[in-house]
Length: 142
Image 1 (spheres, rainbow, N blue to C red):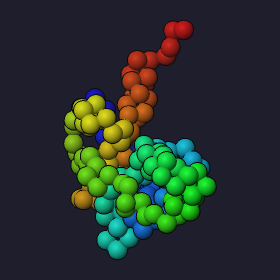
Image 2: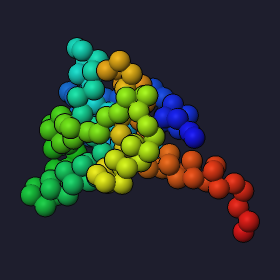
Image 3: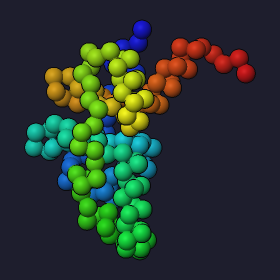
C-alpha cells in the first residue's frame, strides 16, 4: 500500500498571511495550482490554506459589490488571511493514507496539509489520488 510521502507534493509553494489576494491569484495562475498553504512568517508555522474556490468567491463578491474595475485594487488591499481557511485538514506524515482520502471525500476541500513534527512538509490533493489510481490500475486498454 502506498504511503503519504509517496504521493504528496513535497515542499509546497507557500505564502505569508500578509500577502495580498492579488499576489495569491497570480501565483496560482502562474504555477497552475489550486491551493496554497499560508504561513506565519515569524514562526514559519502553517496558519491556514488558501483555495482557488475562496479566491473566486472573493472576486465575485468584489465584482458584485464594487464592480469589475475595482477587483485588482480590492485584491491588492486584502490580505490572504482574510479569506483563507483557518482550520484546514492537517495530517501527520505517518497517518494512514485512507484517512487522508476519507477526509478529502467528506470535507470536499480538495487539499490537505501534511506535517512532520508540526512543520509543513507537503500537501496532498484529490488529483494526487487520481494519479495513484491510474498507477494502480495500470496501462489503459483504450
